[in-house]
Length: 339
Image (cartoon, rainbow, N blue to C red):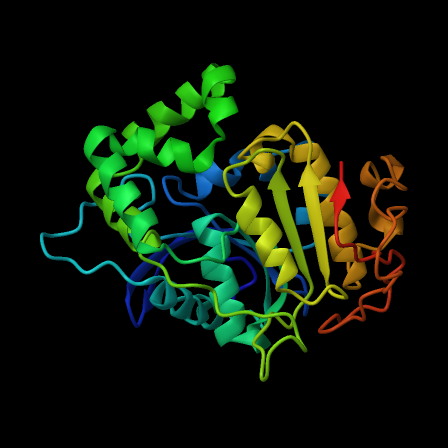
């Protein structure tokens, strides 16, 4: 494997080409951080603010980062030909092993938002050995019922595609009160993402099925995410109910639920500092990011998350694939942490 894959790549998969951007170089046996954006966005619109945040550099210098763009959603993407069949959500998940294998990653820590969180959860369910941990923001584990589907169809007839997508990304309160941010995203969704390709991704996301997960012990042969999971949602975000339901279906001993105040529908944009800190503790709980290597972050609010009380008691997460025994920071997995 070359020492550095830094840059843009088009990866062949069973369901077509996938545009991938690599930042940094592999760090020994450490997993790659793999991101997947929400519908209406691409990796730049969804993650640039978060990954360019100063304290995040303290984390990313320890990992190679792999940003995945859903088919046809990257900047400058060509429009798909008439009759092109956009991959289903399951097929989008099944494209990811090709990325992992192409770069020789042993496993990944996924960060997904909205539709991307759903894809990464599917990926972890189908290929659990490739996923060491997941950060799932604004995930909705539920498929669309026919009433929801009809309502989406109707709104599509009365609203432009960017406005329809904005109502998925932002709360009604944000749409009214945070007009500068919303207008910025309206322009970028309209001008940066190919609208025909976006419509195909939007349609496929809205025809998704329920994420087939249940809390262990609640139903026979329950399927669940086997890796540590951090669920994140902003207060009053459109996905709040879905994230709460997803939390109820996961193993409480390996799941952290982070509800972020004043962050709305895009916590990675509006609260990158709080999210960076939470991500640091999540990584420490898996045996990465020893506090000795944390310069700025180690001096930040060190007690804010680890002092949170847990309804299930304190259960440090055992290291899974970690090649390091330097795990000085242990996370208390919680049903809910508000910050």
